[in-house]
Image 1: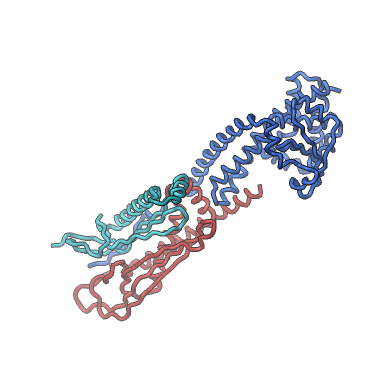
Image 2: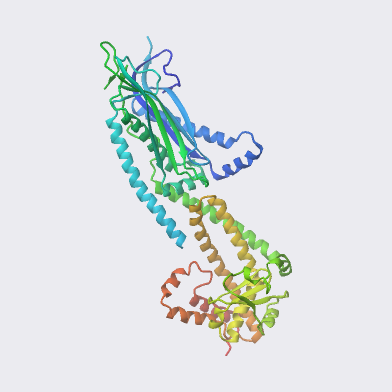
Amino acid sequence: MLITNTEEIPGKNITTCLGIVSGSTVRAKHAGKDIMAGFKNLVGGELTAYTELLGEARDQAMERLKDQATQIGANAIVNIRFSTSSVAAGASEIYIYGTAVIIEDAQ
Amino acid sequence: MFDIAVFLSLISLGYFVGRYLEKRHYHSINTREQALIKVITTNTKRPLGTLGKVNKVELVTGNAVISVDYFKRVAAGLRKLFGGNLTTYETLVDRARREAILRLKESCQGATQIINLRIETSSISQGKSNQIGSVEVLAYATAIYADAPQAGKQATAE
Amino acid sequence: MKYQARLPEHNSNISHEHPLKEFALLLAGLAIIMAALYWALGLAVDYVVPMISPEKEQHWFKTMRIDKGASHWISQDNTISPYDSPIFESLRSCANIEVPLTLWQVDSDQPNAVALPGGDILLFSGLFDHAPSENGLAFILAHELAHFKHRDHLRSIGRGIVLMTVTGFISGDSAALASLLTPAGLATQAQYSQTLESAADALALEILNCHYGHVGGATEFFENMLKEQDSSAIAGIEQLNHYFSSHPETQARIDNIEQLRQQLGFDKGP
């Protein structure tokens, strides 16, 4: 599965467009890490627990996006966009969407 | 004792009614998505293929605000203690997004193509206690109303 | 370029596990964590409490003592007055308690008695209806003295604080969770108190025996309670509630006291 955030892929031709696909996830860290992050907030710096959380959430959303695209027979997703919002306090919500396409090598 | 009784009745009300409503909503989403499947929708900037004479281009939007039920809120509260996927909120945002996109599509019936679709999520009514009330999704895109091209290549919906 | 939209068969953006299953698992996990925390901190309380001597306790809780003038902080509706009992001092020396204790009478229909930190013992006037004889009342006094001697009043305050902290910590700002956890915690605490009550009854029998040479009248209060429960139409509700109450069911309590008496070999009295 080829994933890009450009509309076209250099060296490839898009033959069929399959519509919008998306992947989303809502994840949280356990309460202990939330408390540690609260303490870290006093001195500033990187909140590794939350960096990790966002990474995990993004990976999972990406997996789900690929899964949706595979199901409808795509071999690439172009023009993907990430969006994040805080749906619940302390939880990370990641949404990825893009256009699923079928590509072939350009002559 | 009274507290427990109130809590249990609220949570079972939330669970049974919430589950029923969610099922009904998913059913409606699925049938409407099936009905609107032929409308060409992409999030790319350029229209697909070649267009004939363009009659109208307009900005179209669709939004939806979906709320959680009591059971989902408590379940998510428990899940936040342990970490991991807040599964009860996943259906919430999923429903809200698909509903918003469907409303966008329904608002421009007859459009040849919908391009450059963008989706924004925000949570409103997030009160003092940090408990989520609902999630709002706004979908916006450009709808193109065009005649079929004279000859040659064309974007075909199959 | 063709447009050929399809819908995915399977929605991978949501979990397909049954929500109730997940909920039950999480709740069980939480119950285990809470029980473990409560157990460990409860043990810590039990460890610390015996180190607090009655003198230290009286010093620490000096500001919380009930004075004639400041009696209203404990109860808005009921008046509190000093209670004079001719046998109390003798019972106290039988219990080997060296610090001075004060008896208070609270006007209330409830048949109840409480030992407070600092050395105040409250007798609710409903007691006197159920324990009309001197021996009957002596057992109640001895029971409260036993609680004081065993430092049970400090234990229950310590455990109460632990329970509040644990529920507060876990439920955070979620009022719904707190309303679920608090009664569960109270039930656990009630179970714990029942073992303390039994131990206090045993010491109370010893105090009675020291004072009178026999333990007659020890069960008078509970027998009267039992009679009232039988005649009461809401007896069924009482039964239901007994899991949440800190005192063992009345008949079981009488049997237990009788058993303790036989074990200790005290005279049943007149």
